Image 1: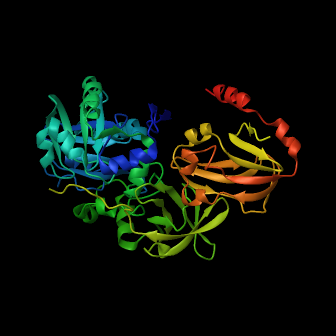
Image 2 (image 1 turned 90 degrees about the horizontal axis):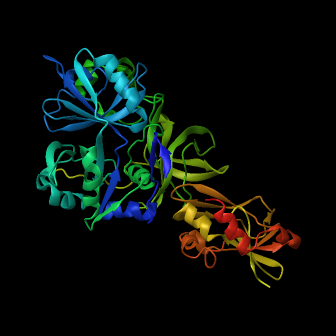
Image 3 (image 1 turned 30 degrees about the horizontal axis):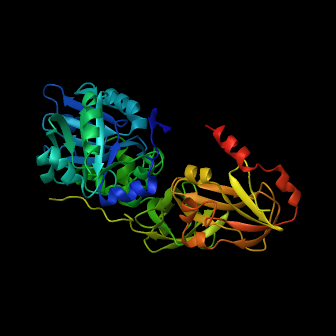
Length: 350
Length: 125
């Protein structure tokens, strides 16, 4: 167990990170992500919460149909990323899932900007359980049959083994799967019920990190933070088309300029050529030994069966196929820029 | 005489004549978790007691392996490069790291025997 964002979290269960990681890609892994922040945003009379929150994020939230969700970021006046989050439209309100480390600051940010138009409720008594992997639909479908038909990035209120839950078909592993929001007092029983299914094993923070890294997904605090923008972090896909032309979110002037003119650096996938893992903060050099950037996440990818990493490099050197070197224990090791994800996503598109 | 001696950094050494076989302990591999990479010194390299000699990386983190004695590398276990998980499976046997030709055999007297090491590990909890 380790301290993580104010919670005691397991890095691994007895079988170890490698086994947990491979199990999630082959069966179903259960992650207790109750430390993450769940926030409900409801419009005050005559107000739209989707329209209101667009002042804080670059995604198209008004275009989100009921039952759909989207990944986005809270940006600051420099276009930096305060936190990244999921926003779902439940029909009459929005549900936000934010990172544990930032949840209090995020709630304060929402209150500061949206109090006039929205009720902001931190759902701190709710638990959040992620079930991820190719067997997730089969397993959760036994307890909540309608979940099988849900497409990736959709959301629904469902009874799971008789418990009123809020289920999204989403996750952060690159696999098909769900996140199930449930009342805290039901969490112990329902989690044990899921763990009793033969395909399900509990997964710790260690494998959560290696899974998301292989899937090419950013971790706030490592790969993205206030010093990086969504454009630099190659998250432009998450910026709505209408938002690009209209702006109207904090930092829009910086982000729109970067979209038009490009950025000096960009987040890329990096594949070291040997077997040695390359970890966060390692220096990235061009082949002449000149510093061109730094690794932000890196480790061994159990499914890739190779070291995998991501980091920022000068845009001139950011094309896939570019060869470079990363410095590990004072030695430059050959590496190359590759397209992410390192392991193909296997989302359920219906 | 070939009893195993242990360091506080969780290396073991088993001496036969003037050469000692060196690895990391069962406790060390358990703490590291799944080993995915091992970096070994070149044969002939001089190593100094207490100084970094090799690197072992698990999914979690990179850790240094320190030389338990001073001497020169007589052999390195290349099997670990291809199959690093051997360190987890058999840390005291097939998962050995290097053989060191001892230049200061007296240094062995400062290391722990198995009973003392067991007690040392228990004291860590």
